[in-house]
Image 1 (tube, rainbow, N blue to C red):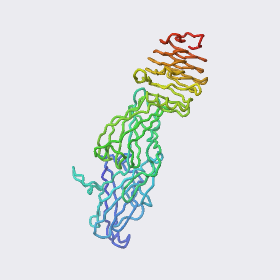
Image 2 (cartoon, one colour):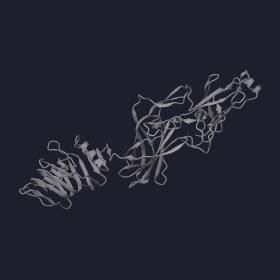
Image 3 (tube, one colour):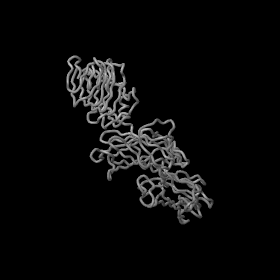
Image 4 (cartoon, one colour):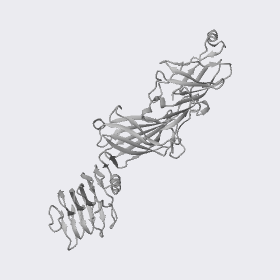
Length: 483
């Protein structure tokens, strides 16, 4: 934080008497921000027409506005006067508000500007004999006495994010449009007398969305920041949109106050910086640098991806990893029209003999009616053990409007009757499989029993007990109509 000094220069006594007839010393105010330190979200310079409110406690001159004219701060109305040789203690805040007191504010995307960067300074003293008021940190090097620190401080919390192109992602061609913090309270207040900023405890959580359409892309990186009210929160939920696809991550908070445990709140005056790598299949968070807007420290953090994005318009889960596939499999149990597109090779976990790593989708009464596409991103190691069940497969039953395309490697599917990649197909199946399918009757690699279209790629080795019916490769079993 730069040292901001307000210099109160005594005017000639006869000039003062002409102004107010009391012989008081008027203040001429100059303020500057050091070029050496980044102090504001926009950089190192005050902006023309920036207005601050100044108060002193001796004669209760409160909330006196002063406006920056490009070189110094000038009174926007009445000046501040010293009345006597006794010390007066001064405070100041930014941005000025005519009413002062408790300012209600919102930090939503439309309000992310300098005027949400609440600043406060206090404790500086002066009198008519020594009219210079210094809002600076008077601690010597190595000292940390808060009673000597009269400099302006940031009262809000700032979160900065740098997005970096990862595997199979190109921001320039695909477009990175915006990002959101989705679990923060955006409504709050700022006390101009004390400098306290805090979120409204009764406020609801809302997304804080930052537009990136005008951001500068430099060497595959895009950076942006958002200011929010200090508040209790154990982690930050992040969403970023690239090429129309939403990526999600959970960002943990570091130990900003250095008390030995991770924080459970965004603290006032601190900047939280996260480096996020956007891969086609996930988000990765690298080093998280945490600093007050004066002092810096470092903290290592990781971001985890949910494994999928949901396209509401097409009613489709876009699945990137195993967690995403299982998320779709759970959701589709309640909605058999829910589509799924697998965008990356997925390997299901090994399980002990006699157990399963997949729960079949659909039933005779409630067949799958959506579109499942894993044709260009194989699924490996699917194991289903259900020797006493009928209609067993990745899909039990597919309806007339249903369509399932997939490559499955190293499957091990065991059922009783109507067993295959699809137990009973009334829709469209296109698949390549390798592995083993076992059952008693109506057993097929692609479908146990087929009533509609099946397109195959290569074949499948199948084991089955004596007396069972089997269909595999591109042969059609005329007895069971399976393929």
